[in-house]
Image 1 (cartoon, rainbow, N blue to C red):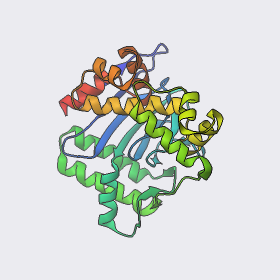
Image 2: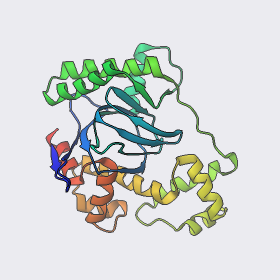
Image 3: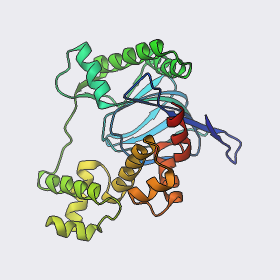
Image 4: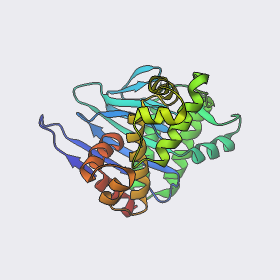
Length: 281
């Protein structure tokens, strides 16, 4: 488990990994004090049990403060931030289930139409919080039967109690198509993206209109989204064994230190530690 000391004597540590017997799931257990997560989003879902201190999550709906016994629920592609909400920081156990895993459990339990989405940002549920922590413990102990059973149980509990059809985001319809086209351009030209002015010119709109439309659609301005997207793509490269230095250049960071800084801020662990855990799993 990765560790690093802090100047004030409080210890931060984190482990971000995959258990081979639980496909479609990432696991993060950590204690953060000074670390802050910049605005970012996930391809899949977030189900997090706060086990100590207070986590402060900045969501489109406002700021949520989560303490021990609470479960934080975030849908795919929802931009958010996270930081300590108390001097002692916060500790949590997080499940990152893929869309396919959520859809599979939703189909098994029935009753949900369309793509499932959480309808609450944070719920007090000590039983579910303990179950999430137990998923981690079972996975860390190599107990696949217990880990899978506990995982499906807690996902089913959250879907049954706090989910409905994935809500559509309110969009300024006039700019929605431009925002989606801009995202496609940035994905295709990630290593050498155009300026905002050039991008707007290519799409036949103005920089300010494109900026507003992009923020409405994705919850962050294009440059912030691009940094997040680069880190996501770097994760995929690291998953396949690509060295961090090569991944950095491929996704458009100027060098490995730039990847290290942004990756650590967004993922919560350095790329080297992330890659080692993938290799070990």
